[in-house]
Length: 44
Image (cartoon, rainbow, N blue to C red; front, side, top):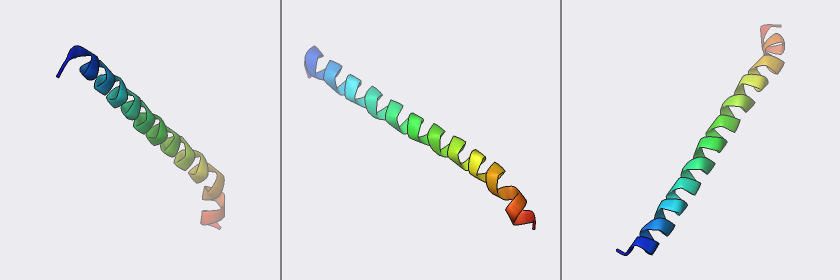
């Protein structure tokens, strides 16, 4: 594998990793804010 192909593959991998990380972070934030909004309703 030449250097150019490796560079493209590495860029793609990094991009996918960032997307996964960001969606995971969004999910965590979404769940925590969802819990905060709905916990009074759950207690009643």
